Image (cartoon, rainbow, N blue to C red; front, side, top):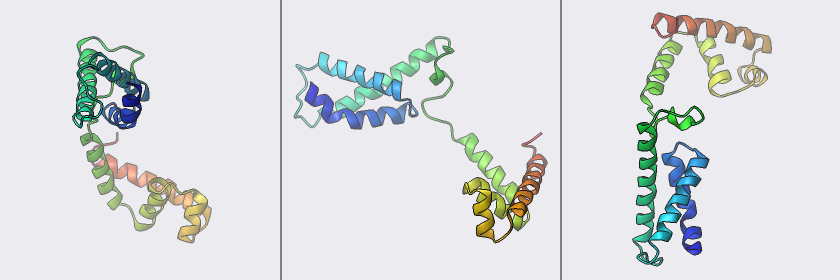
Length: 162
């Protein structure tokens, strides 16, 4: 059982982390449950069989689904942050927000758009942005201020910011 666990642990843990949105503690708990179920069925499992790994992945997936269903069947626990997030994140909201922001960015003047891209999207510091754009740091700061003001107004016009 130890050799079996060591051989498949990495792949199973990665799969569990993916299903559980990176929740390391829950992924380890799920992995322990899978190991326990494999141990309970050890007489029927052949460690050299090619069907073992798919069986382990199926058991892991079922344990995650059972856990999700159990949490949905009872009131959410305050200390359980996973009760707020779904197993599969909903990216529609993020995609729509990104699209609205991209459209609002088109309303900005090129210098304002350029400074926001450097400072917020690329994560450059004021000094790095000033050097890249060939302007003074104070200019970057003021452009950023006025660009954010203009972006807020463009978003307000689209009904996304109050």
